[in-house]
Image (cartoon, rainbow, N blue to C red):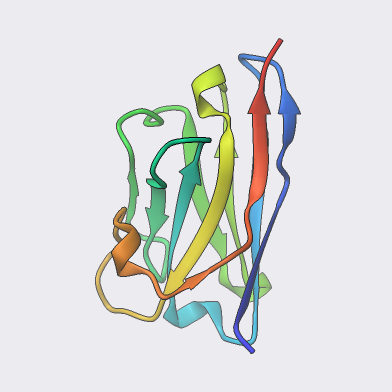
Length: 125
């Protein structure tokens, strides 16, 4: 059974850092594009970052460029999202998503077939 499980969320002060992990099981990560999304209360789920199957291509929302870094370790079936210089507006539930495709990656929700349950990130002093 294909499963994605996010972890690493928590409460952090503005300017702080968190590293989210997305552990996948039931399939080989080698064949899947991964996206990271977030959803704050009352807002639409938005694409934050994505990474191609080999990790050679990445993309970021403008709001996180220069602060967030996505990476993957296919041997460990895990994808990471390093978040630095966090701002209060980064607070949200963060989700990873997967799709078995050949495109580089996408920040569109519609592109992804499988989703994790999310991990909460709160940024507050």
